[in-house]
Amino acid sequence: MIRFLLGIVLGIFLFLIVGSVVLEEFPSIQPLWEEFKQHIVNLYDMSLVRYGAITTFLIIIAIFVVFGSSKRI
Image 1 (cartoon, rainbow, N blue to C red):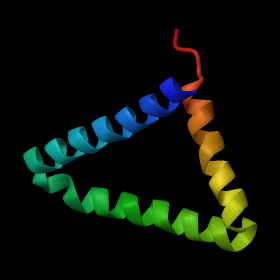
Image 2 (image 1 turned 90 degrees about the vertical axis):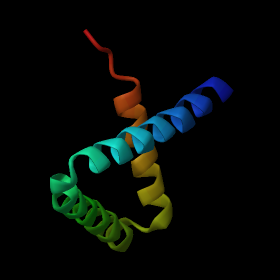
Image 3 (image 1 turned 180 degrees about the horizontal axis):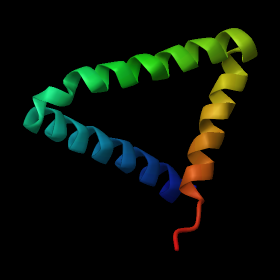
């Protein structure tokens, strides 16, 4: 369990580091990144309105589990 949580934290940290490096090296993709973030926030807000906070949180956790446990060939 601790190994799983540590993996999630390190994955998020790696995602943030790589994302910041990519955005610094390629500033022309900044508007694309902002639009992507706006779409994610919009989906999150719609989910909060439709399902509530707890169910939205469980959906997000389920998405991480599905992608994290997928078998790679």
